[in-house]
Image 1 (cartoon, rainbow, N blue to C red):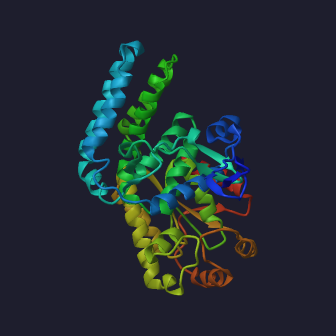
Image 2 (cartoon, one colour):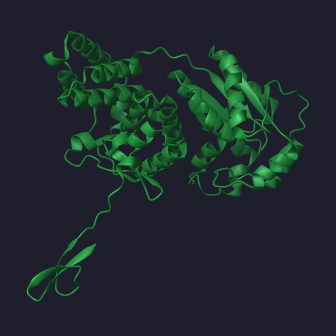
Length: 417
């Protein structure tokens, strides 16, 4: 903030004498640091994206609820307005027919999810960014920062939290970066714990694609192909027939299972459900803080595993593949997941991470910023508890190698399943 002072009968910038007003001095970021530019140049990393999602999730958690915005009839109206622009004669009959198909599909999806949309309009519709695409996010002073949120209209700015993050997911998909799109979805789920909105994600991705299609159609340039590709994206988002699969990854603390699962899940388009995160959400503690001792009782452990299964069921029922990530020391815990897959008629693959105790201990001691609370004492207790007479029937994944190599091995095992 810079003062404007009145000195010698003149206004003087920076003067503290007889201050009459203040100016905000803005700092300009480099356009090369826009997420859109970083992605195009190959310099956008997953860590940058994760940092952004953490920022957005914190903002969402603190934002004010705004009831009676983003109700079914309003979403229908937004979509109709977008489609109407895409039906312009200048774009041709092919685009018009495609746009009309998209509108029908999206309106059908709204009708199908009407009850959930209405429920969430009272709890999860908030005053948010509203325009969260890659051109409105930059790297500045080592942080990923959204900017230029919608301020001119509450109708557009007030939306379901999943509709806000869906813009970012849609933009990554449109820019041929599906792995980053899946990474956004997974990180947001882990941080927000908002699984109840997951059934609406495909609808909101489709809706955001029509928003972008409208913008392209109005740009005045020859954007026929861009409009078509965005409408096709919207169509696929609600029309594709999913083929969900269930994966599980287990192993003692320090085996690398959570790191591998976090890297693996976006690459095979699976939702990563991690026991450490589920546990902390259950006890109501920030993921980056250490959980109290009573969060690690046997009773709480069973509650965590049960909650993970419920989250997996919801995701699977909505067409998403899932990776469940926990220790899974007990044979009955592993068999329960196999039974879940069989009962749901889904393919299942269990991966057991195996490495030497020396390597595991080194990894635990060298952990940086990680939500796991496991230490050497926990690992030693697991070693004793591991003495289970039942053999491990899951596929063994040796995790002694560097993480990139291990992830590639895991991807191969998943794709062969």
